[in-house]
Every structure is written in structure tokens, then in C-alpha cells.
Image (cartoon, rainbow, N blue to C red):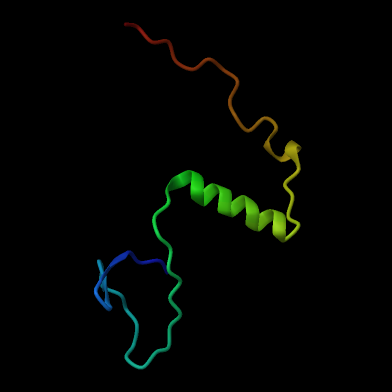
Length: 73
């Protein structure tokens, strides 16, 4: 589950209701918004550090090579 919130002083205000029973222990991972490219770079570093590699042929023929519909301006 991912929820979004904001820190105000010593409290973290959560923007949505969460369904967690009282007394339930949770772990909170703090991420600041760094944008898409920062997240992509982090993802790539994680893959590299774990030795995960996606073979280029996995993405062959993924995109449709047709020119698409005709556009009349």
C-alpha cells in the first residue's frame, strides 16, 4: 500500500483514509518527490545492484510499426 502525506512539525498528515487495525505495527518508508527521472535512475541502480538484466529482445516488436490513422488538418 502506498499513501501520500505531508510532514507538519513532528506529525505526518496522511491525505487519505487507511484501513489498518489499531495496534497493528507498520513500517514507513520516507520518499521525497524527486520526479520521474530520479525515480527511474534509482530503479536502474537497484536492478544493477541486484544483477538483474533485461535482454533487449524482450522489447523487440513491442511497438506497432504502422503509421496509424490519417490526420486531416
